[in-house]
Amino acid sequence: MMQLFKVARRPGQVAAGLMIGLMSWFSVAEILAAEPPAKPAGPPPGAMTDQDPSAYQGMSPEQIARVKKGEIVILDQPTSFEGRQLITAAFFFNQDIDTVWNLMTQGWRQEEYLPRLERSPLIKKWDGGDQIEFQLSVAGVEVKYRVIGTHEKSRYYCSWKLDPSFDNDMKELSGFWQYYWGDERHTLARYGSYAETTMWVPAFIRDYLTRRDLPEALTVQRRWVDSGGTFRKPGYQPAEKKP
Image (cartoon, rainbow, N blue to C red; front, side, top):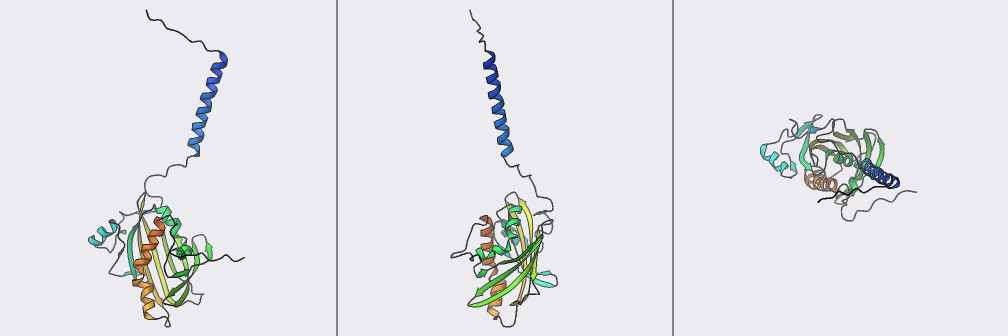
């Protein structure tokens, strides 16, 4: 014959059990509250996706396929920008669009990874833009100029132009970055630039600063962004801070 046994609990035991249960509930609640909120799926406000008609504008199906395979593709045909014929490129960063934006709008850090760039000090920064000085050395020739950058996060677009108030070794300089949301881990970048040096700068240096130097520059730039900004070019040493 089966017997059922009841275990009587004292009031103190019941209260202790309730306290343990409440403590466990609060511990779980605290852990959940401490966790950062999950990022919403899909592109952030203002960001175009790589399905937008402008994402691959001017590119052939073969070039688009190469970009989607992970290549950096420099377009054969120049793109018109503010009346100039720019050298343009397209590729994917292996980071989400906000990480790309936060890193790529720190232009003064370009000295950390660009091979021939010795220094790129930040002269001035304001909401939506900055002023940066670039000091390059190409084959023993020093080139110095300042750039004014404009950052429009409302559409994930950056542009830059030469600072006319500075004694630049560049005659003209302009360009842009347009970023497209690919997915939570990939960002399509469209790049364009126009550069023209002053008369005293040799022609081969002008060539380096435009088409010849571009593949290497974009490769290390992507490597830097993909690393979360931790990559450094060989031998890089930051400038000593002035007292």
